[in-house]
Length: 131
Image (cartoon, rainbow, N blue to C red):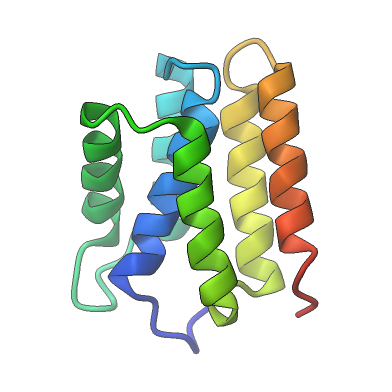
């Protein structure tokens, strides 16, 4: 992951992705928030690129919540960024994102139908690239 300089837009896209999984059932639970915080601290928190990616992700998610953006729209925003910027998404990055989304989906009583559908859409999207 170190050979690519990630942009603010990359981390904003990640915020949209995590938000979409936490809000697909119209509410973000405390357990889902904890999984998001864990994922960000574990894999996505850095000051390496001249900005605080962790705070950028949190601020983006707060804005999505305040603006009442639908989970579907947030996922479409991630998808559009992904398709336009596939070089950011190596197998390793995709694996880490999938792992985080599975954990967010499992956080509250396991995966529901909406979360399973969204996971299937994410898997299909990631299969478009073969890195």
